[in-house]
Length: 298
Image (tube, rainbow, N blue to C red; front, side, top):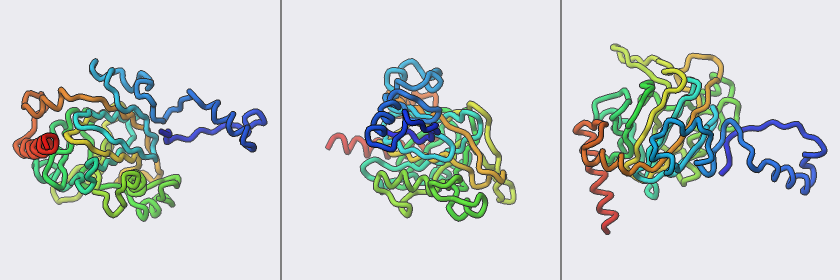
C-alpha cells in the first residue's frame, strides 16, 4: 500500500536516481521511513497518537491505521463488525464519505433515506446510515463533533475551478467528486455510479426559511465512530466543504483507525448497546440481519 503523501528531498550524487542502480539504492533507503500522512502497514506500527484512546481489545485487532492529508483520498474495504474512528486532528478536516457494499456495489449509501427515514437531518450518535435497499450499512456509535452534513454533498470540478482556479484530482485544489471517483474506480464503480456522499467535521444548519448555512468545525480533536453492519468499501476524500466561505483552499489532516468489534455489533443487534437506534433504525437493522443470515446459512 502506498501512502498518499508528498516528500520533498534534495537530490545529490549520492541519492540521485538518474541511473537504475541509483534509483534502486534510493528506493531501498526509504524503507522504514515514515511521513506525517501515510498508511501504516501493519496497522500496529502506527504512531501512538492514532491508538492511545482506543479500548483495550482494539489494540490487538487493528485492521487499518492511516493519517490522510488534506486534498487526498483513501479507500478501505472493511468487514462486518468493524469499528472505524475518524479524528479531526487540527479542527479543519472535512471528510466526504461514500459507502458501497463489498461484492455487491449496486447497493450503496442512500443519503436521502439516511436523513428521511429516522426523521433527522443532523447526524450524530445513534444515526443509522442506510443503503438504497433499506438495509443498515453502518451506525454512528460515537461522536464528539456534531458538525456533519448530509444535505449539500461534496465539491465538484466546475465549482472548485470557479472558486480556486482548479478542481481536478491532481490539482492543488482537488474537488471531492474527483477524488471519490478515483477511489470508486479502484472497486469497479464509475463516477456515474457513485452515490451522494456524507461530510464529516464540517457542519451545516437549516434555517426556518429552508436556506442552508455553513456551521464550520467543532475544533481540533473531534472524532466520530462508525460500526459496520455489512462488509463494505468506504471511499473517503478529505477536501473542502462546498459551502466553506474562505477564498483559499485550506484544511487539515484526519486520523483513520479501524478495528474488529464483533461484540459491539452483537450488542447493537441484541438491543443491549448503550447506543440507541430508533424504530426505523431497528427495522433497517433487522433487514440487514435477515439478509446476512440468509447468505451465511445458504
